[in-house]
Amino acid sequence: MELPDAFVRRVVRDLGPEEGAALCAALDGVPPVSLRLHPAKCGDAEALLQRAEAAGQVPWCPDGHYLARRPQFTFDPAFHAGAYYVQEASSQFVGRLVGDVVGRRVLDLCAAPGGKTTLYASLVGPDGLVVANEIDRRRASVLADNVRKWGTGNVAVTACEPRALGDFEGWFDVVAVDAPCSGEGMFRKDIASRTEWSENNVRMCAARQEAILTEAWRALKPGGRLIYSTCTFNRDEDEGSLERLLSHVGEAVVEADVPEVETSWGIVCGRVGAFHTYRFYPHRTCGEGFFAAVACKAPDCGGRMRTPKGRRPLFASADKSTVAELERWVEEPASMRFARVADTLYGWVGAQADAVRALSEALPVICSGVAMGQVFKGRLKPDPALAFFMGLDRSALPVAEVGHDEAVDYLRRQELRADALAEGMNLVCREGRALGFAKRIGGRVNNLYPNSLRILKGEK
Ligand code: SAM
Image (cartoon, rainbow, N blue to C red; front, side, top):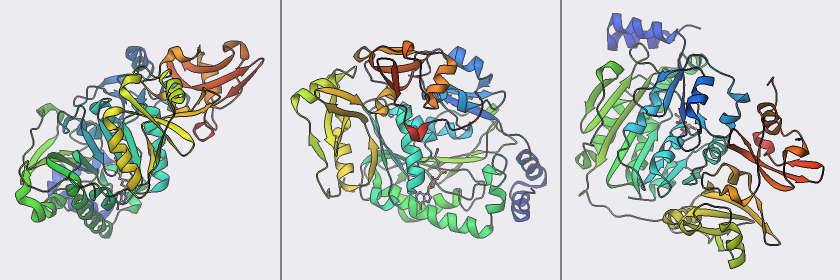
């Protein structure tokens, strides 16, 4: 399928005939494949990268790696354990723009399927909080699956209009808008995106971006950072969106400290007012088309923090013996708080618990912290999410290490051999990476891997 004519005419006009032609030729080439390791979960990273045929590091992301070819991720237990996220290289650059975010609150306003959310979750650490919002319910549920699998326990997934988060005025140290866009940067990776493109759609996207950025700005605290990104090349949705924001709030936008960018990376750096901008062209960089920008809200620009009133109390406290049972399952019980939401018990790192409670009472929160499970007769029936949690205390139950084929059988929700497991609840692991729970009762094994996540078809 050809590139849209109007698109080709525009890039030739904007970049000049030679560079425009080079971009169009690159868009007809083969996209690079890359992943980002989960530093706390990847285990033997060398072995994992060797198996994945790693072919060099993504220069702007310490955990990012290119692969020589696209492997069958579906049959890699490490993928299902959340040891890495298959993420396009250019988008990994946002990790360099957040600054020092350890222990901070980040809002990822357009978050599904969660590539950038999981990156921010690793960067803020256990005491930080990422609020990952996705307007589309179906996509929000995929985002929640990816967040649970990442297992950092420091993410709250919401599914609302950006305005509902804008109402949490001045709440966030970083607000990231990875805006819905016309997707010109995807013309290589996703050929179908060429048919969906039109000049009218570019205009519609630009209008939507203006509305989203207005809400992002409200949610940002004075002194906080705004990160704006798209996967499109046109000026209207990139620099143009920043100019429209500046026309409303320009006097309150100041420069952010920005990282060094090496010339050899091929990134085109620019400025729009106080914003530093970064353009990734596939004929210049090893990655897909991408645009990113960063600036700060002036620390002295006034405005107050505002927390919308909760509609209903949602968290019920858990009794002492229940808490004692939950504490047995986590490595750092003293740093956690537990509560019941509906019929499930949850745990949050103490530093985030009040913020998560305020969000949950005002917004549709799909998941937050770590779902611990349900306690019956003093014993925890663990939620599948607890297996992925980095802070799980593995001395709470027997660990069943399985081979590759058994791991794939487990992920298909097939029955496991009883002699691979101890009696009772087990944590099923492959190469030390947790996949989920299974319960042995005599000669039978209940595979407790969630139906919604199971591998459906294909060869091992
Ligand atoms: N940040 C994601 C990642 O790294 O995996 C990709 C986000 S994608 C570029 C943009 C997202 O914005 C989509 O999931 C889309 O559903 C969502 N979206 C669409 N319309 C929106 C709107 N009006 N407000 C907020 N988000 C919207």
